[in-house]
Amino acid sequence: MSSLSITGVTKSFGATRAVDDVTLDVPHGSFTTVLGPSGCGKTTLLRLIAGFLAPESGSIAFGDTVVAGDRVRPVPPQDRRVGYVPQEGALFPHLDVAANISFGLPREARATRGDDRVAEMLELVELPADFRHRRPDELSGGQQQRVALARSLAPAPAVVLLDEPFSSLDAGLRDSTARAVRRALQATNTTALLVTHDQNEALSLADQVAVMRGGRLVQSASPSEVYLSPSDPQVAEFVGRAVVLPGTAHGDRAACALGEVVLTSPAEGEVALMVRPEQVFVDLAHAEGVRGTVQEVSYYGHDCAVQVRLGDGTPVQARMAGVRHPVAGDTVHLRVTGLVRAYRPAGSP
Image 1 (cartoon, one colour):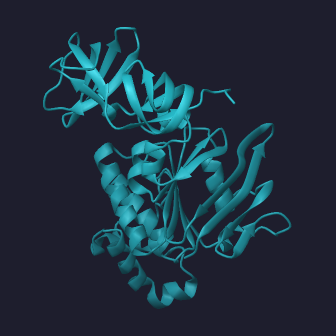
Image 2 (cartoon, rainbow, N blue to C red; image 1 turned 60 degrees about the horizontal axis):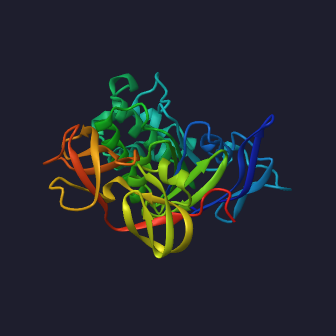
Image 3 (cartoon, rainbow, N blue to C red; image 1 turned 180 degrees about the horizontal axis):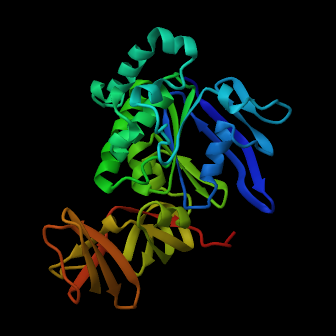
């Protein structure tokens, strides 16, 4: 296993720059998610790392070995020791589970310890030993993805790349499969890179989240930092829900439609304020705060999303426990808890 270093990588298709000067370090044994909307360049980045595409500029290295870069002959995909797990698993339908898992092993390894390695991989991905004789069409979608991961891990790759491997699974199966995959990668101390457009998946699985937009990497940090301290309002609105309001800052406080808020760092003048819905306290007793009218309530059981329109017409979303909640038409009072991040308006010096 080794670290992954991407430095200044660029790739275009005609006039479209799909990956634009991307630099990203994935430490040895860590799990990084590349998060972004469809068309942002994240799958192209994955294909560049795997060797399916060649960068126009920049370099890609596994540990101390540069596999692509200026004045370096690109290392072919089959020689990069990369495990690749595509969206649908792509198991060979004519082979059983054991043959699929051992497919990537060198011929001599298959002959001498193929059975042992298959048993190790099945245990690692939390599948019963007797699954070794099943065909892919006898497995559920989640089981197929675990076998695909086992196949990618069997040759002990330097890096494992996962291309939205859980996107076709239903919600419950998606979560349990993702957790099993994460545990398997941790158990082998494997360096892994997952691309996804699912914010919850990115935040809950990763050691590091890298956010892409328009081919560029706009923020790379721990999940909590990306969520609590997004680099700009666009990242804030993409990574989870966010209420972005204009405000006027003076020192460590700012005034906005939700009243006075306390800032994460001092600022002056006109700012954009980022408030997470769970920071908006909904006062059902009308004791204090800014008055508003409930427009809609989305109930999820454990909690609910409450859409409120303030007296000045400003729309605000709050999240609150589902035990007791308002209904559409109710009058409530809102106030902000915790610290709020301020951004300079776009175009300001």
